[in-house]
Image (cartoon, rainbow, N blue to C red; front, side, top):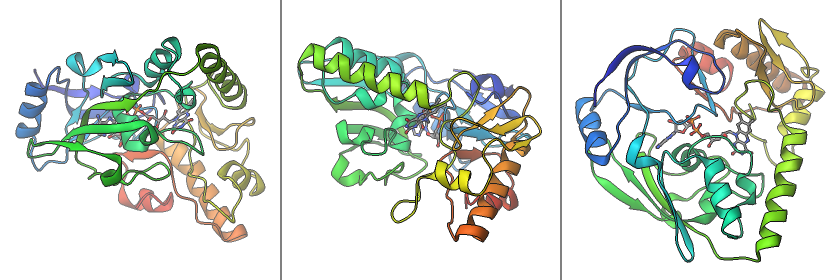
Length: 297
Ligand SMILES: Cc1cc2nc3c(=O)[nH]c(=O)nc-3n(C[C@H](O)[C@H](O)[C@H](O)COP(=O)(O)OP(=O)(O)OC[C@H]3O[C@@H](n4cnc5c(N)ncnc54)[C@H](O)[C@@H]3O)c2cc1C
């Protein structure tokens, strides 16, 4: 494994936005991951999946960045489980469940990203998250210790999980009970159809910008709409007309454009509605003052 320097990150993330990584490595195995963590200990390593939930700052990321590849990409379907490496793609997991008639994975249809990113974000729908299917997940600590984590310890919640931010997920076993084949397929296809119709797949985005604030507040898209930000544009970033919780890159957008839209939306939501919006997206390589403007600190 070798470290590359000044690696452009925009082509590696879904948003196609952001500056370079000062250092980037692609561990192919547990041994290479352990070596990378040893070499970077104490320097706040970052793990990148496909950047489907990530805004990279325009100046790039000073911390070392790791992308898991090779051995981490496997998917094995067992009698009542699906076991996969952290680099396995969520759409491939959804497809494995669908093709093998395993119930309970329809909510992963059309969710881009990797299993590792999905575990970190507890990816899913409003009602269900990936951790609802986890039997265990293995993670490596910055000191190189392999820890098996069960859901009762991880205490997953809406778009978060109680696992230290610097632990690297490497593998997980998901409970995948056989269901009735046609019913499983129909659940997947109808979920996918609804999601692709209602959300945005034809322009680069990173999905929902804001977490839903929860009862008694309306969903985030409705808040963005009611503070008259739907369709707003800064530079080459725009709040989408169809789904007001998506900010899209119209081509050549900068992180500063996205942050400008987020800051104004958050300011209006607080001033007009008394609602504090919290970002669902992760931001890397962004100045603390700007993080504060969007509520990411
Ligand atoms: C069109 C669209 C639709 C979407 N729909 C949904 C949806 O319905 N539900 C939903 O929940 N999300 C949705 N998202 C967001 C995104 O798909 C998920 O958050 C996904 O889990 C991100 O995975 P990733 O691998 O790309 O993670 P990244 O964006 O690369 O990283 C996200 C976070 O996970 C961490 N991470 C990545 N890999 C690891 C690892 N191996 N170990 C530890 N931490 C890791 C990163 O460090 C970062 O903090 C959508 C995004 C798009 C663009």
